[in-house]
Image (cartoon, rainbow, N blue to C red; front, top):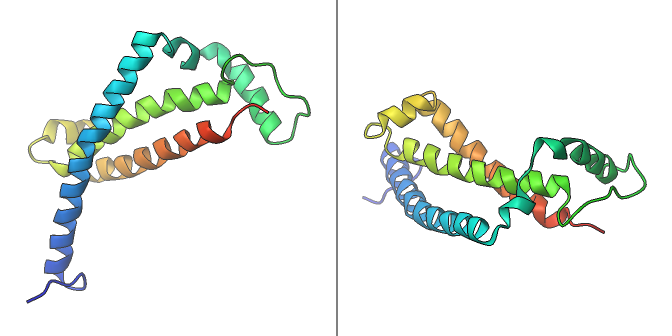
Length: 147
């Protein structure tokens, strides 16, 4: 009997296949994330990319510029404050995506992690949000180049 997504058995089989595929893709995400962090630390590039509290006023001014509430481009260094915010956010959201992904994939074996994240449903919402936010944040760094 062929499985169909209209039946419970077909949905469950498809769900298991999606989970396995997602879990398999977690390892390249982790590997490339660690390589990226190692590059940032070794090259010292993290100093130029880290969003600091002193960048908040510049981020507000840059947001005003992008929203056409300010005519002149605010002064900036190698990266503008919104780019720094996006690059800094990607690192935290990537780690959150990996942790919540593991908590959703193996909630029984990693019950301590699932509990730390607020339970299975909270981990599901969190993993969906963190993956979406990190890809949006990464897109922002591509489009927020200086003129």
